[in-house]
Image 1 (spheres, rainbow, N blue to C red):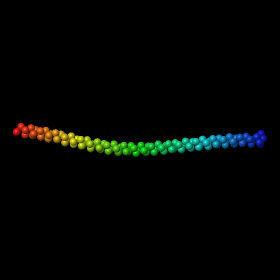
Image 2: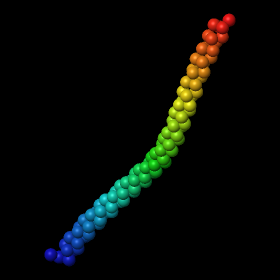
Image 3: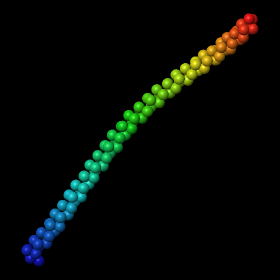
Image 4: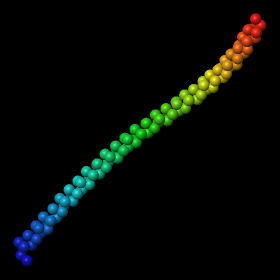
Length: 105
């Protein structure tokens, strides 16, 4: 093998290595791009999760307020029911008194 043939072989191998290196660099760039995309999507998920936590907290607070409101309304209804019963009893007594007064005439 002559020196020129050897140099040609070495040059071809170097070209092959350079092509392989370029291919690896492109592959690495693609991996980095995909990793960046995954990181961005993960950040979006984390942001969404924080929003869900805030919404859940608001729902919990509203539920507590509604529960308290419901209890207050139930107490007021009970009071109104008692008052209505009292009015019915007094009205009944008044009707009896009216009937007695009419019978006295």
